[in-house]
Length: 104
Image 1 (tube, helix red, strand yellow):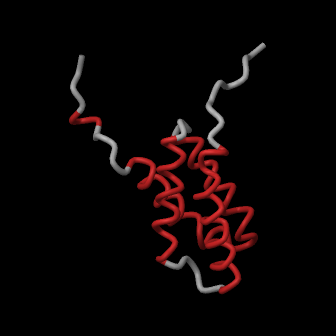
Image 2: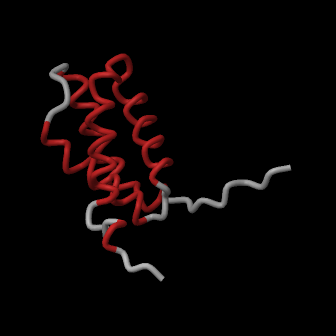
């Protein structure tokens, strides 16, 4: 029997940035003009917030994909690529590249 995944619950930590992103996605979907560039900072902040809350990158990507799916309905393909990319960029923003980390 497998044990539950002991990942931290970051939902309360990410709530403000998630709410802002949901509002922006809903507005973009209703405008029917594709992905507006002004939501990039919101998406990057969401990715950073997920990292700071302890969520692994693979779960952060799944999280933003689910968010896009739920907020853009049938236009998911229009939004998913940029939002996943911006989430990953925000997630790793300010982190140290692996190649520069000291080895022990």
